[in-house]
Length: 288
Image (cartoon, rainbow, N blue to C red; front, side):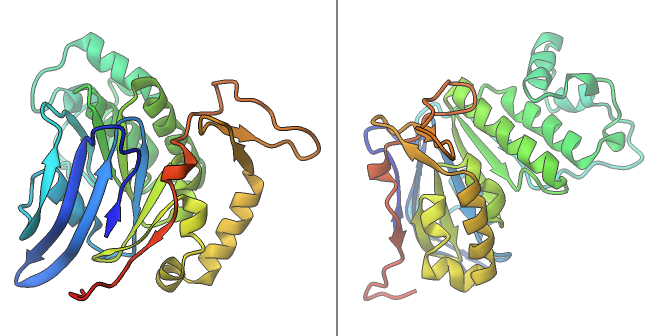
């Protein structure tokens, strides 16, 4: 099925009818997905749903068994992997990590670390970093290439709740300042809800997609994550109520007063609502 947005923009990357087989088993089936400039798309699903496999196929690291993947000509991708293996006996500073596999000018490294709030870590050993610090450093490393598309595989893994909120706020700011597209992978809709435009729920096929508040009520989502997840999200949504302005911008609502117009600091543009409708998976004659 198709999960797409804002057709007026040329997609940065687009999968059409993609299927992936590994070891003779079907891992992904008939995936249609597009990521456009300036939008944040979150790919969620349980463990084993094929999220990382789909990322690898989109990046050209894994050939699809069926369908096709199209990347915009000249596309530059910044990739934050799910994990980075560092030899514990290897003396490696953040400065050195940023210069791998090719040297990076000091000014560029400093600018990238400053953008992710990690400038103070330049000379720190990577072995001394907390989970949140390591993710900020890896995000800075991904930004060094000046990417059109950021692909973030579980960007808040091993990060505490406060750090998760800070990281997603940082990701939203980067999108706003750079105008790049962002594809995030997560297994938890709750933590990505405030910082994503569109959610794609994957379980080897696309179960449903749309705005996060709509996906959270979809039967396919409830079947995967259970009603408790939806109840948690209902509380979260209530605490972050807003409306959309005429251009699709988010306008937060005051509890006892008129809507507050966007200031451009805490509010960020959203794609027009007309392109965010919820879509479920339709079973065609071919099945899964």
